[in-house]
Image (cartoon, rainbow, N blue to C red):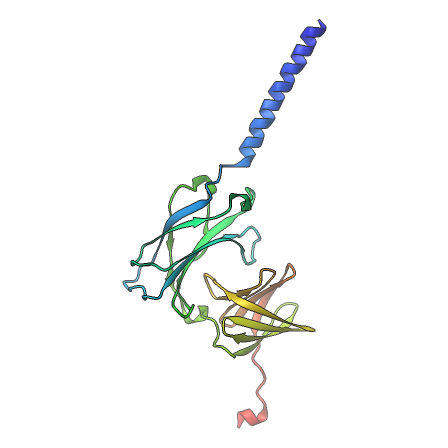
Length: 231
């Protein structure tokens, strides 16, 4: 009798363990291949400049209304015209199954100025073997970084700062401190970041993030003109 009871308990335990194991495997999601493939193209009948570069980026966009976190990037100097094929490699261990990811592309010229860029495209790792088509559109003047040596004050919802734009960098003068950020690739607008502090600018609007705090509604606040300049 005791043997039968022990056998029943053992069988129940095995069934429970098997069920839990199956549930765990379902929550793990698909096995990651470590790369995403596809192509980058645009609709205009314009030839790519000979010095053009195509940059494809994968970012973690889980945090809503904030700049994405860099995951992987591929830079190519194409030898042919569009569509340009890409094979973006990433570390599978850097992907969290409960996070959201997006892929985007930018085409820049030899001066690192953006020519075409795309909006972020959500990535489904369940369909990771399906090629991704990225359509880029022509960049407007608002997407180009301000000219070097330009000084622009900004007022955000909880902070005021002065941005001094240099060659591929921006110097932010904040209350009590100054921060210098390098320019990084951006699908839209001009973006500067050192990984922990980010300043994104497009036209008269900007977004500033520092120490995990995001300052919204940043707008250019022109410097006052003195009487001598008015004359």
